[in-house]
Amino acid sequence: MSRPGGREPRRLTRWWRRRSLRMRMTVIAATAIAASVFVAFQAASELLDGELRNTAENQLRADSRVLATNAESAGLARVQLPPYPGSGRLVRVILPDGSTRTPAGQPALPPVSEQAGRVARGASADLMESKDSDEDGYRIYTLRTGDGAIQVAHAADDSPINRFGLGMLLSGLLCVVGGALVGRAVARTGLAPIDRLTAAAVRVANTRDLDAGIPDEGGGEIRRLIQAINDMLAALRDSRRAQRLLAEDAAHELKTPLTSLRLNIELLVRLDRRGTLDTAISAESRTRLLNDLGAQVAELSTLAAELTDLARGDVSDESAEPLDLADVVVAAATQARSRLPGLEVALDVTSVWVSGRPAALQRAVLNLIDNAGKWSPTDQPVQVRLHAGAGAVVLEVDDAGPGIDATDVPRVFDRFYRADSARALPGSGLGLSIVQRVVHAHGGRATVGRSARGGALLRVDLPAAAPAARLTAGEDTAVR
Image 1: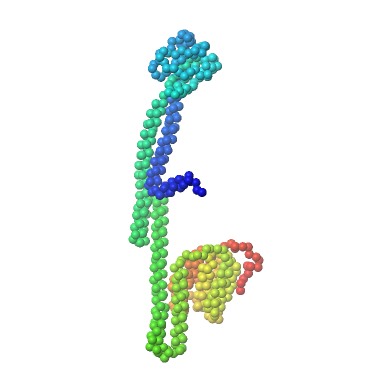
Image 2: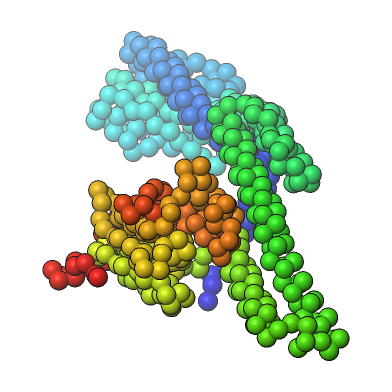
């Protein structure tokens, strides 16, 4: 069961979060000034009250000494008391027998307190005390004189404090209003770059023009925010440009196999409608044509899968995990042998650990082996070596083919790029591009060179990772 009292803070928090930044800054400025005025008022009131109290007590002491001097010469019973001025100071004499004398017409003071009586009896020299009645408050000073005491009192006057408080209240209200106005002006001035930034972002969103960058202005946080947004726009431009190039290249690559597939199918359909399919095309030609159709369909399927993989980018349901790359390489080699029964793969792999996505890494290794299998002679195996380097894991795949021409090396990993000598071989030109993307996503590097057998040597370097479990002495052995 929820507590009703806990809802109010949440409502207040939600209300506060829904306010604009200008409103927040205005409220914060006004609240800060109001708190400052309140603290200043409290401190000034205490100082003023203490100063007035000290002044009044000093005056009472001075008046008491003057009256005590007269009483010592004339006696307490006969000393002439000053007439009551109508307000302010009040006088009373405490006689030895405990009775009191006051000027004629003077208002009655509170009864003599027990402490004042002890002063009159000689227990102490003087006493300062405050008396609060229902109507008036008095500050009374008692001074031992002769066999009795002299008391001088003054009615407490809070009017200076009240006037001061009223003045501070009015000043505080003016300061709060002024602070709110100043806070709003400061918010408007300080948020002006944000307003311009917002307008520029809205303009980019409405026009879809990612080339229209936001002008760099201001400094500090504003400049960093503008630079971050411009970097984001640049990344979006690059992504859109890459998508457009991918679509254009895909359309170009799909055009040829689709055209060939359509022409062959139309030929078969037209001959079948005429009833001359068996006589117009020999059995050998018909078999070759059907084989071509199957190869073109397989090529289109491969191309579609690779395009889907490239379009997904780094988006994957897989999460990175520590894994033994040797297991991935062995699985990829087994899959390559099943796809190409005549392919021979020689493995020389050592158990090494990396942090990565198993399926993506297996796809990259499979593409490397498939690429090498296209060029390697039937009597020469594709060699796959995996070993640990200096803080890295090194995977090498080489073949005994003709190698890669020096002019083709810079573009080996480009999308849809195929060397002139590879035009007649199956493939879409996307396999090595996928390899490079996967390797880069894992923080590695893919390079191409020439193997000792004269063919191509494709090398992948990946960051090494600590093994998920301690390896036994027999596990770190080469797999042949």
